[in-house]
Image (cartoon, rainbow, N blue to C red; front, side):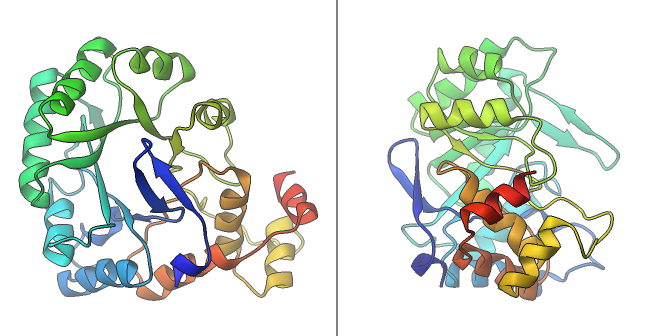
Length: 277
């Protein structure tokens, strides 16, 4: 069980979660890929295995992803945190930021309804809309907090300057930027989060592998631990920072269980350094 193998991270000072979460995006979408009953079973299995932080968004299949999680898990266990996002739309071809305050309010209200919640524990701005002043976007989320509809606010794909500006309006509890073993472009944002106690939620925590080179560091360490490369990549993230909260997603129960098992891997200092090169 995950709860026996990893430490916790406290989001926003009052939301303790296990440091390996679950990204739900792949549970919905192409009906040929995954039937609904299987998707529901995977979500339930994640919670059975100790996962208590689940990430979704209103843009995942036009809200169906949120509805599926409610169907699978409601009434939620007291320790389960469902984090969702608003401020970006996906009409099938491209992702478009949309941060007008009235839109953010509308989407938060719809997320509350779909998730069957009275309050969203962590509501994240999916992307900053360059056409709308950042203060207006964060101000809309702050008003939702003041009304008791949102507990904590998070941001996604942001710079340190944007984090600093947003933090003047309301405390920022989490940052969700792309980060993994082979893509560490936002190292400076991670370090900022470490200094300020902000949860760092790397999306795409396991980079797609172009090739599996038997001599590369990940393969070498994986053989030593009798693990997969993906497990080693997740173990590296957990080792990298105490504020790290990976959310690997999958549409496979076997891969879900494999990912969760990564929390039990203990990397040596030499292995960590070898992977970081």
